[in-house]
Image (cartoon, rainbow, N blue to C red; front, side):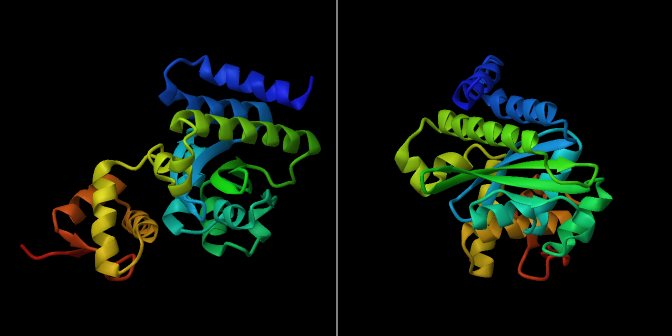
Length: 242
């Protein structure tokens, strides 16, 4: 069976789940099952860096994605910049992302792989794979990852309506990520406080939430209500006096 046919079969299985909002979760679940891995995550990018998680398998998949976005480093960041498959078959000996490697080990992740998703020259997302045991991807697994990467790209395009303008400014793609309106509002306020762009502000929010052990939405609500400012170090939780 040719690869295009296999990709079509994967897409048919995913869209058969019914509601469009279930497609990304169906895709990462099926990818994890097909590859026999502990977790899979799908994130969107703004053509430069990852900006939001669209879907992740429960447990290891969600942990791996949350860690990368909280820390602002990891294999998906590398893949987005390199525009090629990046492999970390043994995170315990990989010194490219020290914080991520250490935190991933604590979460039970021994190996990780990240495939950038592109439409022509435009980067639209990354598909991440996590394993509990160290070791490289087999040739068969790499082939399956390529197939699911093509299917993931198609799902992102289907969910955004395949609108070129939406792809150019990434607005349509970031709408798919699990970023609630209050988080967008808080990111805008943090961007002004720190004098940075919105992507950097969102990463700062995630880092603060991770460092303080708080849900991202709760922290965002405090920022919007002006109970908290994020113009100090990531682990410094400054609450505004009442």
